[in-house]
Amino acid sequence: MSLAVLNPVFGLRSVSRLQRIRAHMMSSTVSSEVLLEKVGNAGVITLNRPKALNALTLSMIRMLHPQLKKWENDSETDLVIIKGAGGKAFCAGGDIRAIAEAGKAGGSLVHDLFREEYMLNYAIGTYRKPYVALIDGITMGGGVGLSVHGRFRVATEKTLFAMPETAIGLFPDVGGGYFLPRLQGKLGLFLALTGFRLKGRDVQRSGVATHFVQSEKLSALEKDLTGLKSPSTSDVAAVLDSYQEQSTLDAEKPFVLQQHTDAINRLFEGSSVEEILEKLQKEQSDFAKKQVETLSKMSPTSLKLTFRQLQTGGGLSLQEVLVMEYRLSQACMRGHDFYEGVRAVLIDKDQSPKWKPATLAEVSAQSVEESFASLGDKDLKL
Image 1 (cartoon, rainbow, N blue to C red):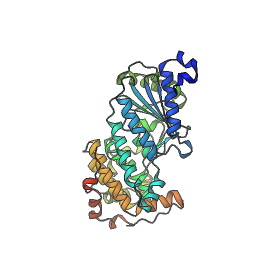
Image 2: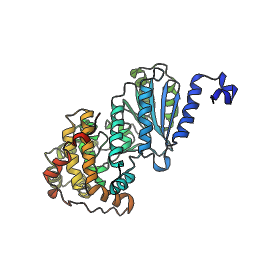
Image 3: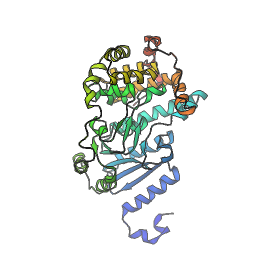
Image 4: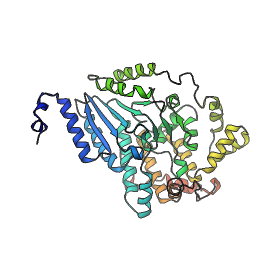
């Protein structure tokens, strides 16, 4: 039954209004985890699991990827906007618990979710139309993958960015091996190894976000973006720039790591995690002691994999990085630390993981090498 039959008034409404209603009906019938709508010439995605901080599931990925492709090839869609529902998070990460359960049970989710998520990350990274991620609230792990590879990332004072994977026996995936080594100096490696959290304007100052706009201005910003007619990338940038200029909150505060930038660049320069740790231990400053304490809690295997991942990823394309990271993800799924990290942080919440191996010295070069080895016909294909 057509919508016009349901209510004759619809016949008088614009085509875009019909498209919005159809999109709403489609999203509510297929899955309410993701809302897809067409507003003017823009495709608007709302991640809609607010109680789960919009954590990314496989079913969400399977809705997002084909829709992005459809909009990319649609002559009446000029840009894509992605945001999170609920006001607390853009997307707090992937559904880590579900992956851990599947891994223990021998389920296919450990292959499917990583493979399809990375394919989605690559689609975002190579998107031919302006892609605007409104990263208002918590943005970690999988949420970073949905935003950082897009052309525009808009942080607010509520944004909390982190890649905390080394604390759960993983590594900063979703293309972390691509964007982190490309941040200024050794900042990316510091963020990757320690899981340090950046907040608000600092997310933009670090280079993770392209713009900073106050949260209260986002609805007006979205309205202006969806009102653009056949915008170019520079048209979208001009709107974002104008909103950033109006957002003066915390403008006078220095970058949170500004006083430590030289120390980070010096101390996190090294040919191994052990060398970095040795430098930090010799330093004796409060900042260095804090980093030693933080790193001592992380999975030694994860630290070594992450170090090599960023060292290698700095010279690779996004496509090559995601192929590498898929190999690493499967190595972690075969190992011990990921399941132990999820238990300690998310299930029992005792925050006392028992890593195996327990020290950096015990993580063999061979085990690291094997984690990066080709999976043959099971490799990720992009």
